[in-house]
Image 1 (spheres, one colour):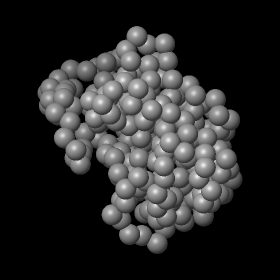
Image 2 (cartoon, rainbow, N blue to C red):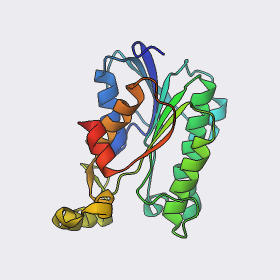
Image 3 (cartoon, rainbow, N blue to C red):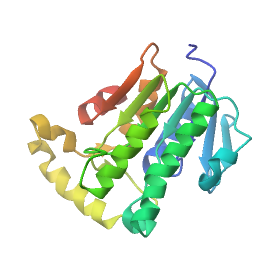
Image 4 (cartoon, rainbow, N blue to C red):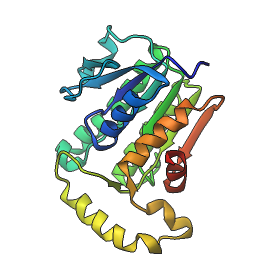
Length: 223
């Protein structure tokens, strides 16, 4: 598989991780085209960038997608922002799986997904259960290689305010140094590191299967 002249499909390009991922993909020599599925323009202009205005409720009907090598999914919201649990499920599960299915139809063989620490399809926690179900369903679509990144709190400048996360990050930053051993996975991580890790994992050659990455793995891949 050639590691040059590749086409990336990115969903979530206007979010915290997705924005950084977009910038890095556009700068990466392995990629000659970056197709961003968007509901609103990213505001970026670049020769490699192709923005596709998409209805995420009808991705199966999208006919203008070129052949794709790698898929990057950084979609996500909160229950508060979505307005209800069903609306949250639609974004964090249904849209995620729909993008992954779209990528497979376009020929993609590798996929990187931003999930969450603690994701588990059998969890009693609704948020973590949804994340786990998305991981499970994406992993079953036949990709040769699936990279699942499970960060804890994400550090970075968001376009929208998330007061709860801001408070959590402030607290976690103070106690982060005390998180050792198994607790290291709960350390806050820079969104730029998550984006860098997504790309680093997919441009490596010869890797197959489903791989789950947490704090230390993300930092290592990003370095």
